[in-house]
Image 1 (tube, rainbow, N blue to C red):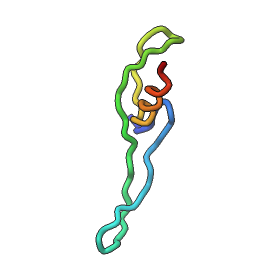
Image 2: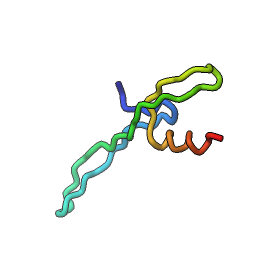
Image 3: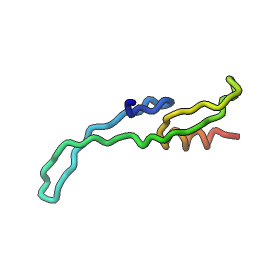
Image 4: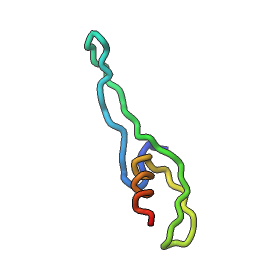
Length: 64
């Protein structure tokens, strides 16, 4: 299963790990994905999603 958020479509990011001597080695920054069950008002049922923590935070903000 690929590490992609099902709501925001976030993927991994390329970056560098920089040592004390300033040697740069490539690394991959993965998305913080969590399995979450969310109630769908349109389908009137629970849906299992694999979403990022940023998406979970925004869902909590939108909840009334």
